[in-house]
Length: 283
Image (cartoon, rainbow, N blue to C red):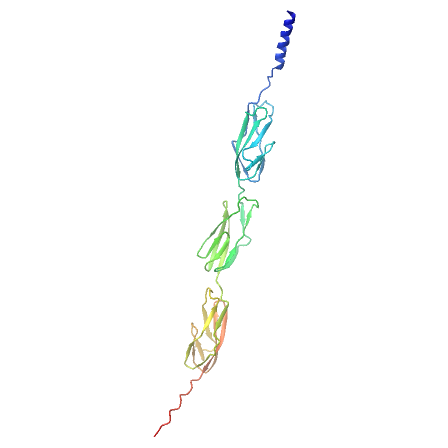
């Protein structure tokens, strides 16, 4: 009998000795159900557990899409590409206890656009390329939207400005709510040469003649010429280059373009020859 009582006492003592009354992990959680990070950003997240008096549990970290973001054993998340992934932890000793949040990786927005100069010039029919500086250097998408304040004067396509007609426009480059402006003056195609036919210009008094001339280049914006004679008493000239001989002697005729390019020829007035003698009379 004594032996049986002793064995029972030992069993009761063993039972009490083996029982574990310490609190058990019941839950894992994060502060937010969703988080955001910028592309290329690194951030460490912390999890919570309950009850509070449980020793900090060891967990496994995982990302549902490691192309979007990766996570290491310390909860450090690296954003790799724009998109969405789920960051999850589960208790090593009880994988059924988990917590997660949705992570959205957002692009790095453009914060500034600047032009090196305030104004540029372009000739009608020609192009210039505007290349503003876009900040930050690691902005995800630096593609800019371009507009012209007056496409009748100049048009713009991906920073290439083409002059249409004389005038001034404001070119605007914008992205992510940020913009910058640049003034472009469209200038005319200037006259480079005026030529007057150099054939001998000896004309009798009282006669008129249209001078033969050309203005280069052929596509000059304004080919208007101003005509002048240095001696109107001898030779006059009208606005179309038609000369009239008024006296004997030489005068210089000058044609001048709007930008000052000119050409000059000498024109001489000759006397009208006497009429031929009458034929001899026959008796």
